Image (tube, rainbow, N blue to C red; front, side, top):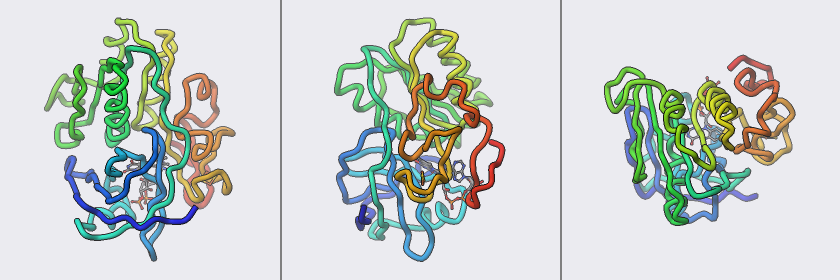
Amino acid sequence: MLHQKALITKVEQENFKVKTFHLDLELDAEPGQFVMVWIPGLDEKPFCVAGVKPLRLSVAKVGPFSEKMHELKKGDFIWMRGPFGKGFELKGKKVIMVGGGYGVAPLRFLEENARKKDIDAIFIMGAKTCTELMKKPKAKILNVCTDDGSEGMRGLVTEHLEVALKEKVDCVYACGPERMLVKVLEICEKAKVECQFSLERYMKCGFGLCGQCSCGGLMVCKDGPVFTGKELRGNSDFGKKRLDASGKGIEI
Ligand SMILES: Cc1cc2nc3c(=O)[nH]c(=O)nc-3n(C[C@H](O)[C@H](O)[C@H](O)COP(=O)(O)OP(=O)(O)OC[C@H]3O[C@@H](n4cnc5c(N)ncnc54)[C@H](O)[C@@H]3O)c2cc1C
Ligand code: FES
């Protein structure tokens, strides 16, 4: 797939380490799918689609590529290919979305779609502290929590998920740090509720050729990045291991 050139039309500061880039492209993509962003002479990295009309990407500053992205301004260009992978599938009439860190971005897009389909969503979003919270979705039921209680309820998103699951829901959608996802799976299995998770692995090709994104036999770029709880149950690498840029297995 060829790269498309995209003009940055707006840059929003979500919090002290995440910026959302609005691009002059409209993409036919589902929440949970991703694009490979290329900055010539630097690198190419995957980012979740955070919105499609216009295309939006939320980028956390964690290393050389994302630092360069954060220097870009309205009027600059990036190149991208995609969308790739399998996104979230909306199911039923009442759902819960659980987002940690920049994982909130694709779930905000999913919540927008849920509203269009008259699906009720309880949105649980969290961060360590208030300065790390992402912008809030327009969800009717929004539970904001921080580990230190500096905004919203004190505690982890998973603690609030356990409370929310006292009501019957059709599916739980989660995106965020993998340790959080492991806990969400455990809680959903106990409550016997279907769940879907967006995973991350170091990626090179983005479409199933190089094997870099392997997760216990699954190719995250092609088989995912969204997986059901059933697909992840018993996976030897889920929450435990990923491959670094050189292909060496490292602990999560
Ligand atoms: C499908 C997918 C969707 C993604 N969506 C987003 C998004 O919407 N917003 C966003 O900010 N980031 C997203 N990422 C992660 C992003 O691609 C990486 O953080 C990227 O490596 C940043 O490049 P860098 O050069 O800035 O940092 P790097 O130097 O490459 O990485 C910084 C740190 O993050 C770790 N890391 C890098 N890539 C991954 C990975 N894939 N999984 C786990 N740890 C990793 C590195 O080991 C290092 O510790 C996504 C990744 C995948 C696979
Ligand atoms: S990134 Fe190459 S196979 Fe997934």
